[in-house]
Amino acid sequence: MAAYLREQSKDRFLVCPGMHYTPMDAGNALRGNEFFTDFFESPDEVRVLLDYCADTVIRLSRDLTDIVGDVAGGQVIWSTWMPGAHATSLMEDTSNMCSPRIYREFGREYTQRVLDACGAGFIHNHMLGRHQFPAIASLRGLAFIQASNDPSSRGCWR
Image 1 (spheres, rainbow, N blue to C red):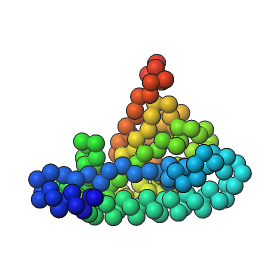
Image 2: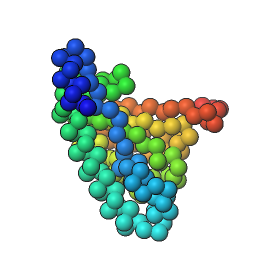
Image 3: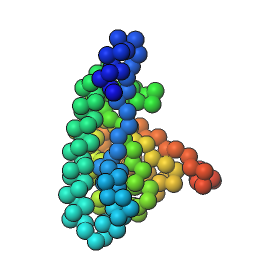
């Protein structure tokens, strides 16, 4: 689809590479809700899965950015320019349903691996996941964080 849109654009408009799962989100998509008990019951297998997911996310992100090209040496994601020809946009939603300890042990290092490989990143999260914001904000190469407000998170800005 990205290649088709790029060809059809004839350089009249930008084609954005789109948002990808983080490794933790990809692991949850592959395993379903069992992923959340796997942290406790099969931690070594979770790490193997997250290694695979990190490599896959990096490959997908690089392949798509190679197809759509860069914009002045960066990528445009959600109307925001990020430096780095392979900059990526990631959804870090699964972390919202985990404790900060689980994210530090199982999520952060794999998201960091993606950001290191891509050079910069935009991370989408939710206000219900604000307990993860300190860990997410400490990621090297994080250019932007976008926190979606959730209907049940009223008053979260206090």
